[in-house]
Image (tube, rainbow, N blue to C red; front, top):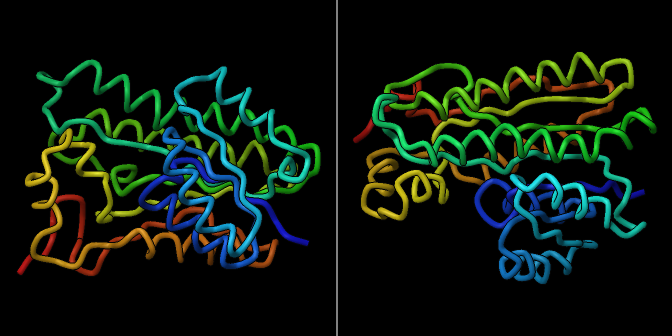
Length: 250
């Protein structure tokens, strides 16, 4: 019997790559994101391999999250795997000159959005006493770097929430894990630097960064382990990266 995976932030980067690999490996996929045009395009691509459903909403909108997830048709209503991938970074400013709107966006998406989506899905998992939740964090969940302040704070929160989920959901036999990537060459830096393509591209110059497909492959490995195996916490960096700020560049 096919399992169903719900993926937030599925319109690009790690989320899109994860949807692609799970679809090719016999999972039904629920694609969630803000951009319906991208969701529709990806749905067409993946329908060649599996059943696909799209949900357009912003994880910051609590009512929309609950309404859209509760609207799932019966065929997609039993969610076996939740991948909380939606997240962002805005700005790279020291705390004293940080932008309040940037702070709100990071806290609302990275922390509250993850909680809203989880709240919408966890009750069915506890009722069944089965399920798997993967929260996508960052190496910023494990260390703090200059000008990372609030972004690092939100990813530290994801790490702590993941640990708390694992404890609270342990009596129900639900697997909970977090995957913390280092520098992945996606649209991440374009968002952080607000469309400054030159500044964004410089982040990945001079070394081979992780690609979205690298993390998606790891996610597939994690969800495909025998049920008694839970990969609880995983940090992944490219060979060239030793920490958030130490990178061997050519």
